[in-house]
Image (cartoon, rainbow, N blue to C red):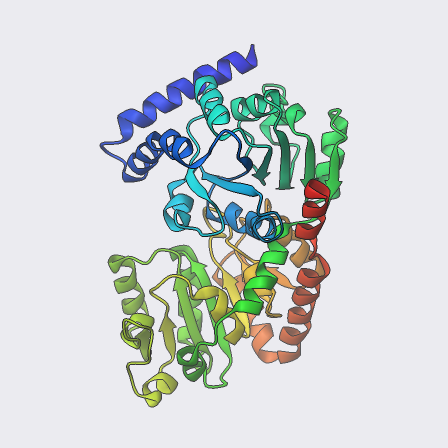
Amino acid sequence: MKRFFYSIGMYLFSLGALFMTPFVKKMRHQVKGQAQTYLKLHKAIRPDDRVVWFHAASLGEFEQGRLLMELVRRHLPEYKILLTFFSPSGYDVRRDYEGADIVCYLPFDTPENALTFIKLAHPEIAILIKYEFWTNFVRTAHKHGTKVYSVSSIFRPDQHFFSWWGTLDPLPYIDHFFVQNQQSKDLLAQHGLTNATIVGDTRFDRVIKIKQRSANLPIVEKFVDSKPTFIAGSSWQPDEQIFIPYFNHHRDWKLIIAPHKITGHHLAELREWLSDRRTIFYSEVTTENGQQAVDDNVLREAEVLIVDCFGKLSSIYRYGNLALIGGGFGVGIHNVPEAAVYGIPTIFGPNNRKFQEAQALLQCGGSFEFSDADTFANLVDKFISQPDTITTAGKAASQYIYGNAGAVDKCYKAIFG
């Protein structure tokens, strides 16, 4: 009965999305993209193709599954790789990803959509990243002989699967869970699901690979000029309203800000808040092909660098002494391991409880939480006055990341032999 009401809910949700398309750009992109999915599958997949289907909700989940996709591409060329996204923020960025043969949207999870999708794609193996458990798609794939795996999954008692009003569907149709921690394995076992293995988070392997491939950024290096540097990664306004006033009074530290939202209005706000400091924007000091467009002295004399472009942050962290990870006063913190892999302490706001890597880094002394301007000041004052605390915390962060690597290889060997 709960499955019936779930499907009714999905019909209503898809109908509501259709009505919202004239008013919500993101929804319009999603509905339009979903309408092209079946045509893409029909053109790209033949009846005799062997298909591995990877599904990610958005960009973050894609990054968690990326190395596993790359291993399949490298070692198992007989498979075609199908990559689906639910969110436009993932699809729009990775629609041309060369590691997959087909990249498309996952349609809304109605029984008809699931049946049509599975018949066209006929995946031999389905790999769902982290939280993606669509009832009709999983049940239909299982029914048609697809081996379904959950990778980097994490479970908590407050999830709807385990509540009185929820249902375990579709978890019993997952062939195996590769979970991040013991709590997840124990919680599944309490509900009769013993097909789980603790492998950790594939994201650690990914950030290590990103670090190995990270680009040298001479512009950032010249800006830092061997001075102590604070990096704010994916910062939101509540984060900025705390750390900017602090560093406006600690001008011996360089400040790099990579805001989460790069809009004209917000960049103007940042310029105003930093009006008393020599501030440069990344786009202003580079040419269209990324070359340096100003004199070296301009970079060295600047006090604040605002990164108003995408794709640089993961390489910029290497130049910092201390990093703030944004989102802790709203949507939830962003990618902590991306900074911690460089052996620098990370700090963030209070909305971090659902992020296992943040909790583990807090416990091992590689990360620290602040709740307001006073706790931020106390925390950073200690780092500044006792530089050895930065070294100790950074070492703890690096050891945690490297000590928990290896999940990708474990998943690959278990799934593909």
